[in-house]
Image 1 (cartoon, rainbow, N blue to C red):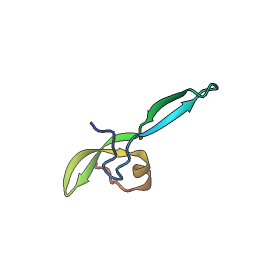
Image 2: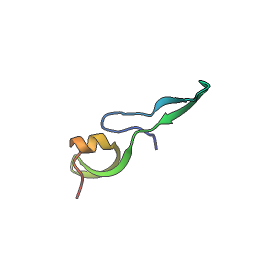
Image 3: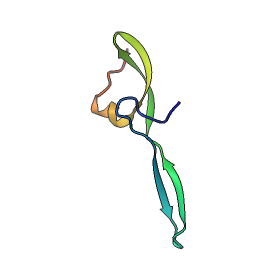
Image 4: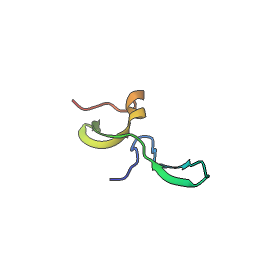
Length: 63
């Protein structure tokens, strides 16, 4: 499973927390992906969608 939204293509980012001594700890910020059943061309399919796409209504959930 790739950590990528199948609607908008959002992928993980690199970020760094910097301590008082300016030592960097690099880590990944993953998008908030949800596995959702969606109607695609009349068939029900399970895809990974980020929560911002769900909230914006870019995806219609299957019943």
